[in-house]
Image 1 (tube, rainbow, N blue to C red):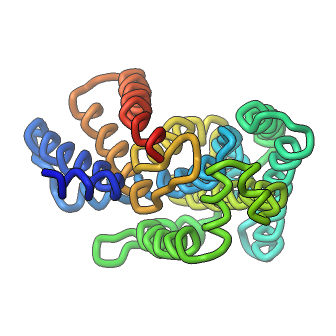
Image 2 (cartoon, rainbow, N blue to C red):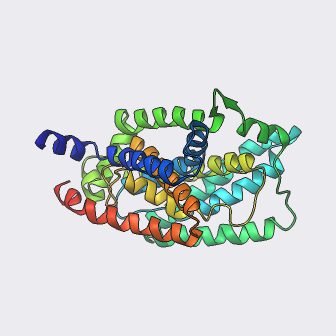
Length: 314
């Protein structure tokens, strides 16, 4: 038992996959048609969007100081609209630069507000998010909501049952694993999570790193918005709202410590799958979406309570 306890404490990501496996069993039992491989692949595809946004949150949360990015769902919505209007025909190349540029500016704004104006990240990013939402309200009145057929076809492409979205996410998962645990950039983020003052004394440019982290978070969220808009073949004003809680929950369920300093890329992927399967189970039982949000909130609270001893030890 001691060996198992040590393994699970060092590899907290495993619980998200255990939870996913249990949900698969439950869904198979309560569903009239069982649970097919095709349905599993569909759930993994839907979980891929949550995973990408979970990584956005993971970067910010791991950097410590209680940081969190609440502008993410608004970035998703804005970039979905931008992609529908710019990523088509002769404007595609310009559209790529515009969308990435917008995301960089949003991340830069979040970073400056947090680092130089000393506004807590939760408040600063939420304020930026409200500004973005206002822009979406104005922009959506005259903007095209449907992406180009080519972009939609790309996002809905499948290879052997796996969607291109899932494949891209697996590649991204591998890349982020290397970045977070094998590069100086990733190690600096984890060091900052131990305490910004300590990281500063260790020679890390904390202000610069925080701004880079917010920019990276915004760019990932923006790309996710493009892919999501293409996958569902449309954009709407509340497009990113459902991912606010899911992104945070997937990160925490996956083993990232809310106080910073410890992350889990693989666990975030497992957490995203777990939450998606949870939503599927609730849908099968006929409960409303309100119940899904309630249960997701309860899951976050339970994870925070369970992680408290780990934080103290950490």
